[in-house]
Image (cartoon, rainbow, N blue to C red; front, side, top):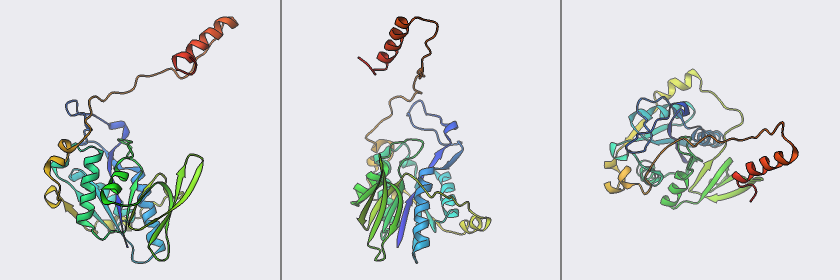
Length: 266
């Protein structure tokens, strides 16, 4: 059984910068980490690997050459190999262009996959779109917001505990399938020194635009349906109001106006 885990290199939130011309995030020279939700997806893949024999985990990421660091981190945490999808033609991709590129890269690098695990979203974009879009492109059944997953003995179905507003639901899907995860294991395991050394010996394959059967006009910024017009921090808003040293009528008027401005009353 082969589980593909999509992982992403994201900038630490304190170091986010935006290119004023393209409106895209500047990633070069920025301290980066493995997206936490991707790590949750990897957690669940490793758990399935421990419960079943001959399970292989392939971590795949799309990004610049330095994104190899998140593949190394993924292999320290239990992935068996990595796939780096990198090419300057991929730069500036929106969620659709990213999903299309990753889906084709999965078809190319791991054509016999059984499962695709994805974090529900990346902390640098928070769109939660790429996972479901990959599922649609690959024609896979999808389960989102997973918090627990297990494979049945026949290895033909996956059962996922899905997070919902008032608790959880249990959903089954026939393999191959895609699952996005919103939570990881309660107890996280830090890689040992031996894990770190072994990760350096595991293979990392490179995939470029030339390997994929995607027209160049559908790649990167030019293949993106959405364009960032402007990026700016939201204006600070008052979240509370202190009314003091006024009579009851004036206090009521002030509170009413405060609520009206925030559309709690008409």
